[in-house]
Amino acid sequence: MLADQSPWVEAFGLAHPMLLHAPLGLLPALALFEFGPLLLRREPQRGAVQALAVLNGIAGALAMASGLVLGGSHRGELVTEHKIGGIVLGGLCLLVMVLSFRSGRLPLRLALLGAFGTMFYTGHKGGEITHGKELENALRRLFGASEPTTDGARPPKPLQPAATDTATTNGATAAAAATDFATLAQPVLERVCVSCHNPDKRKGELLLTTREGIEKGGENGAVVVAGKPDESLLVTRCELPADHDDHMPPKDKKQPTAEEIAALRRWVLAGAKF
Ligand code: HEC
Image (cartoon, rainbow, N blue to C red):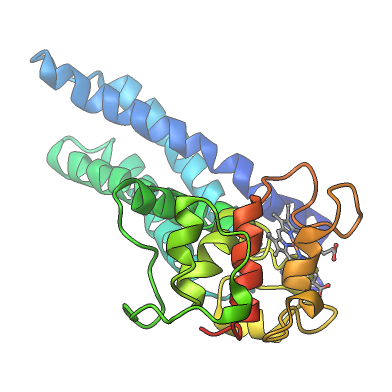
């Protein structure tokens, strides 16, 4: 956001997560009114479609404009993808509005289908900005695929002697065979940390979604000291008592399991390799 932005403009930008829900409801309603009657071999009610299309055009334009204000100076792949999707979607909502007043139905229907598809893409990218890739990772776990690695599949490295600790569950035992980031640390960070430490939020100035971010650390400097988990904030702040002010994640939020903290510890102990 721009520093000299008026409070009105700023509030408009911050209203984006609320405003975007209007087209999210109106678009399916519009599709239902346009395509529903076809199933019953009737003509769509033009008046209803036009009224919804006007509301949706306005709502779409507001959602897009507020998003551009909110995301103004943010960079990063996800934000850019979401932004492009939002601009296309806002444009399609306006196009649907204009086309609903023309007599030919085909252009309207094509634009409506386009808007519908774009809505899913844009909504999904927006969700990833606020919630991280939780959905993608859950699906990967569900279908047995491994988490994506940064440099393709690497053969598991033998465990260093000092790192044989409390691995008891199946998952932790399997992970004990490897010492790399993608196997040990990344799944934990993605499950419980990146919702706050991502390009869009960066709580404590700390980015946990990229190697550069993790190596750079947060507002108080490095969070990982290779080989020394007890000096690595990434580990120690999770191990603090839950009611300690510095405990991570904050106490009312989703917490890592003991195995997950052990996995972070093991990754740092083994040299914090990526
Ligand atoms: C609900 C949001 C939230 C979640 C989830 C979260 N954090 Fe944080 N984190 C914060 C906030 C806010 C700060 C800055 C204030 C502070 O230092 O306590 C912070 C700061 C930190 C810092 C200190 C950075 C510095 O240089 O001062 C570390 C390390 C950290 N978090 C690690 C983690 C880890 C590891 C996880 C996952 C196990 C995690 N956080 C999950 C909100 C979160």
